[in-house]
Image (tube, rainbow, N blue to C red; front, side, top):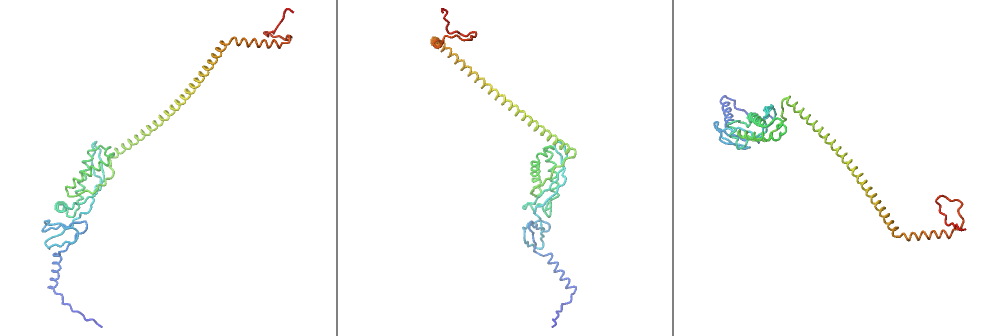
Length: 297
């Protein structure tokens, strides 16, 4: 089965012109606009800002125009920012600054600085100026030793500076400071010398501690020997005193009992005489007493 064919009116120049005019009218008079996430729509009328639209759909009359303005976080890279310390040492640093446009200042920034929210050129210039101003307050050693404070000073000063452009600083990523090669060599030599000095001091302290320990041990041993000698001397003195006292008591006893001793001696001699059989000893040694000798017989 063959379908019937629709007959289209022939295209004429007049009809083509009407169609093109209609398309142009729709294009220029299209009232619907979209503001993407992270943006604001700046509405201008004959070049003048007349309003700010939030994210989403915006309906405008044909005589107004909408420009999308980013309020997302942007970044500006600053390579080899140059400065000089208070002791005239040149220094360089590379930084990345992340920032965004304050939502209540979109119209001001759009009018004065940027139609799309990109302030990277202003941020780079401001960061260079701030870095020079901050580093001039520090000596080179302090710039290295107090890096956290230097970073905080740059951050605070840059916040104030970028606020003039309607931007707010999110964070600053600052890489290592770079000094001249000669100065870096001098720093390395100084660090090496300091490490050697600390090592020598630690070794000296160790030797001194060992010597003190040896002296303490020797003194303790000497004190122990002295205590032992004192103890022995005291013991000997006590013994000598005891012996002398014993002799004194014995002498006193003997002095008081001489008659008793003499009586005991007589009794002993009597016992010997009673037991003598009258015979003289066959051998007499010098000093040997003869019990009795009756010369009358």
